[in-house]
Image 1 (cartoon, one colour):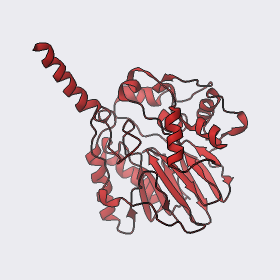
Image 2 (tube, helix red, strand yellow; image 1 turned 60 degrees about the vertical axis):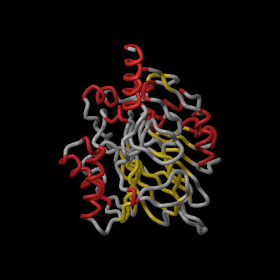
Image 3 (spheres, helix red, strand yellow; image 1 turned 90 degrees about the horizontal axis):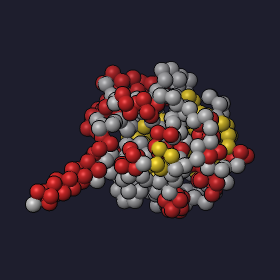
Length: 331
């Protein structure tokens, strides 16, 4: 009986912390559906989760991050990780992707850059990002001809899209030990050959990515960090706003983040990203972070409260969240 009781208690603890999820930190009323009919020449977006986005104008498809692998909490903490080739196959298929011009990881952590070299290999894309991202590509055996290292504020043209990477800052984990592992010693200085421990995928440089197209402009902020004044002079019709972990920061930090992102680029639409679970399924409804991961970045309720307060105070800005995989007209 004692052994059975211990087993039941262990199972309950496991379920509570490793197999159940917090509610997403976004308002369900913001959700939009896929566009039923896509007018010719439209600029569209598809969303997989975290910061993985596919953009296309019908001529040039390209991708941010391209991360489809989902790793369980224990493997993240105590094991070694590597791209899940079947998950990549499924993710590309669900996004309708066979060819891409470029894949741009917003920084080099596993949940942004780990799958990107394989995505580039399969689609013929250029892997575009920091030197750390380039070393992830080299470790995967991606041809050097498919690797391009970003230069801060240097615009690069892909079809009618102009991509301008702007060096930013990663979200600061509240736990000092996690922050040190994830953000200190930030560069991957040699080709990275998986499987490797999670934190071998070092952050590299974190970017804001400004995109312009004849139909409109947008900014992608994949992590809820900022550099004061870095976006001065840039504007965007749409802001893809990294929201994960905002609630774990101070009210002063959140106010500064809003000022440096939203008030700088003055969007008319805000699309929160990187608010869903890193370990949840890549199918079905989005879920919030698994509860054990909540101890690392947390603050789900405060994140939602902050976004809803800003929505109420800024009626000229429309907040919306994207469906999984379905194509949505952006412009």
